Amino acid sequence: MSTAPSSDVDATSASPERWLYAGEDVLVTEPVKTGWVAVTTHRLLVYTPDSDGRAFVSYDRPNVGGVRFDSSGNERSLAVLPRLFVYGLVSLGGGVAFSRAGLADLLAVDAGDSLAVVGMAGLFDTLRVGLQLLELALFGVGALTLLCAVAVALFYAHSRTTTLVVDVVGDGAIRQPLPDGTVDDVSLERVRSALAQR
Image (cartoon, rainbow, N blue to C red):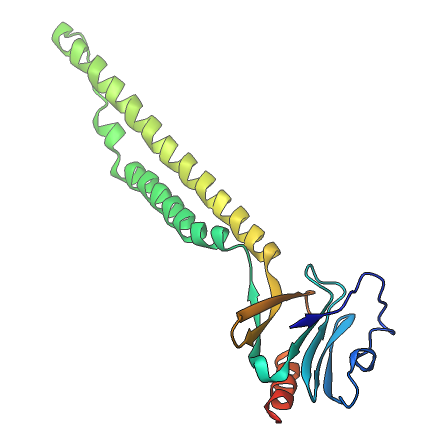
C-alpha cells in the first residue's frame, strides 16, 4: 500500500490523473463529496480530504480482495443501549405493578381508640410509607434510565460514520473514514465492477 502527502493538495490538483504511474489509466472515478474513489488499471485510489483519516490512499489492485461501505458508530454505546431500555422498562413496570396492586392501601390501619392496635398501626404505617417510596423510586429510576437510553441512542446516531472498507490480502480489512452522505450503492457497484476487470 502506498500513500501520498495530502496536507496542501486541493481538489483540482488531486484529480486521479495527477497520481497515475506511467502507462496507468483510470477505469472509473466515483465522487465522494469533495474527493473521489478511482479504479485504475493498476490500483484503487481513495482521495477524501474531508475525512478524519489520511486524505489520499492507494492500494495495488492484485492485493484488493473487495470493497464495501460500512456505517457504524460508537460500539460501546450500542452495547449498553438495550440494557438501558430493558432496565428502564422493568423499573417502570414494577412501579405500575406496585401502583395497581395497591399494597400501600392494604396496610392502612385505623387504630381508633384501641391502644393495642396503635402499635401495630405505627408498624403498618411505616411499611406503607416504605412501599410508597419504593413505588416512587421505581417510577423515578425507570424514567431516568429511559431518558439515559434516549441520550445514548442520540449519541450513537451522532457518532455513526460511513467508512470505505478495503479487504487487502495479507493486511485484512482496512477502514478509510468517509465524510457523511458521500456514496451510494450504485457508486459501489461501479467500483466493484471496475475492480473485477483484470
